[in-house]
Image (tube, rainbow, N blue to C red; front, side, top):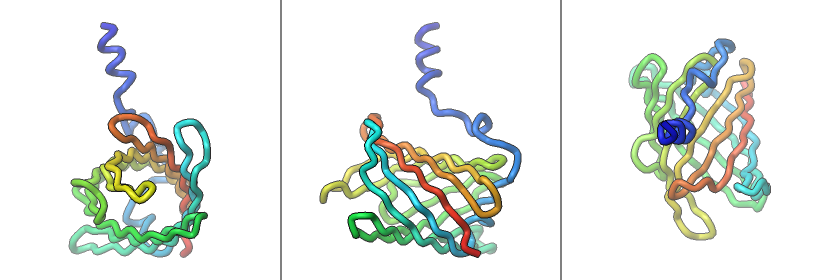
Length: 170
């Protein structure tokens, strides 16, 4: 019984417990067009280590059910980075995606105003490539604003959290 309780405490939260019914998040609607994002990376000790902005453009291909999301990052230390995600809608509320540095498929699910997105990623850290796991929770606040909290882990240990606010430009 104690073992079962410990396992339940370590399990990832279910998406149904993390959503509100409104506003409804439809990923391909929200991320189509131009967006701006602002974020920080906070290490596991609570220290803010990096700050960044992101200019994003999303396009939706109805025929292939694919969202292409181009993200141009500018970090506070002057480093730039571009990520291009190809996110395919696989069901009414499910998605799979890839990016050149993702390892395997990223998988996600929406319900109500929430999107849960998990993936492994090759992250550059001090000139080295680390395999890390991202566990993202996104919440639509209104038609224009979305909040994202991502937990980053390596070898099962929490490295820190990323907090991002997205704003639709059009």
